Image (cartoon, rainbow, N blue to C red; front, side, top):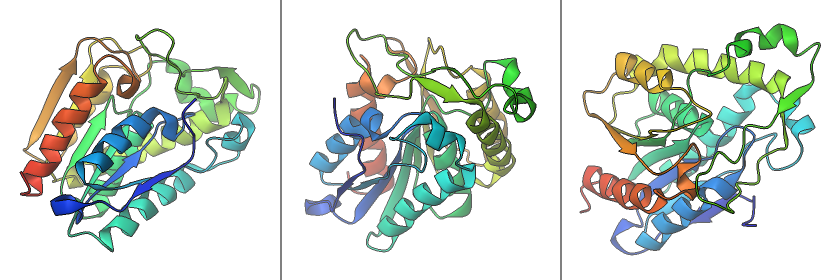
Length: 249
């Protein structure tokens, strides 16, 4: 199993002053994003991928973590890069996509690249999570929605209902901020995703402030596309996107 620890790279060559802050998803860890982060680092980008609060330990830890702490950790990763780079992008998957968009609403990012970003729920019970968390502590895991056989992101084996309530608040807050996201945005969207519904991308299309929005279909991956058959496409296209908008082609 690839390590669940955070990942940093100082960058090298002509891209050393171009940073990418990378964010993993809900109940997961940097395992799901390490391949992407390492690819960008090898290209020369400065990369900062944190382990978000409440993740990489136990689901019980996550159940006690407010969503503001997830955002705090990712915003800190962005700010660390911004302090030493001329240009900084944000990239995330699932909940990491929501956090990336939220950073882009508050800071002058050069661009946003997200994979199956989460802003809405597939399960209607999520809207009652604030009530249900007092009755049910956890529900079955949402991790490892991966088409490629034998691959695991190492997500929690249970999903804490209290954390789902926090996630719903993050989603609502981020949707309200989408008009403030004016940076170029690249969205990778799996045609089959058993975790995040299509309504999530539709919300982005309807509300985002940028006119430079591209949605790229992924036809051979499920939700955790960064570890699936289309991973190489994500890595290459995002790298080109970052280079283009950093004027470093």
